[in-house]
Image (cartoon, rainbow, N blue to C red; front, side):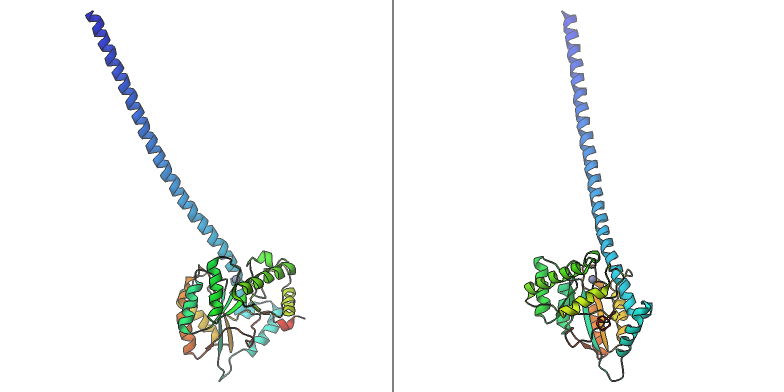
Length: 314
Ligand SMILES: [Zn+2]
């Protein structure tokens, strides 16, 4: 009997031990599982954040490629000597006529491409504060905020110009048909939103851009038929270049070139990435006013600055 009781007790002890062991195995398993999943979650989260950063970078680099393209045109406009010889003759003649002569009042037209953007409202605030009217060559944006910005541009007395609806070089410059469709789309859209039909345009990349698949003269001929005037620029702030100028340098770039001309059309960009432009604007306006320049919005009296003069196209 005692032996039996003793062996029963031992078996019970053994069972308890086994249960204890199983329990601790389960607990250890759960702890390991929790730890592993936590580590995995954190790792995945970090990877996700990293991927978002990469995506942002990628988006930025796509934008900067577009801007580098525009910048190439910008450079050739700022220094005509770099342009193709065929263009030089016509352009130098036009440029010479525009060189500042004694006693002339300088006319400066500030222009902003690529808006509306997150910077537009601040640009408009500064222009209002400084009592200056400018010109905006806009693209097509259909959200509510952008619609209000188009309306504000018009309501505050600035000139609304067209830049293209899509701003995609490979689309708009594919053919005259594609270009005219894009332009008609933007023109009717802006008329619907603001009540004003824009009659001026700036070609993305300028009229002498080297990216168009179609001879730019075809588009120029078309615009002449439609009674639309295109404006390039003879002064560039450099805000679309791959070099990140400080706001002070952007002002200096403009001041350096404006001094040479009777009429200066200044290229700047209204884009979310261009906070330097916003910061440069007030000091730029102050310095231009100090030198006695008239700051004007483009209108029918403005001398067109054209890299390919419209007169040279039949
Ligand atoms: Zn542009």
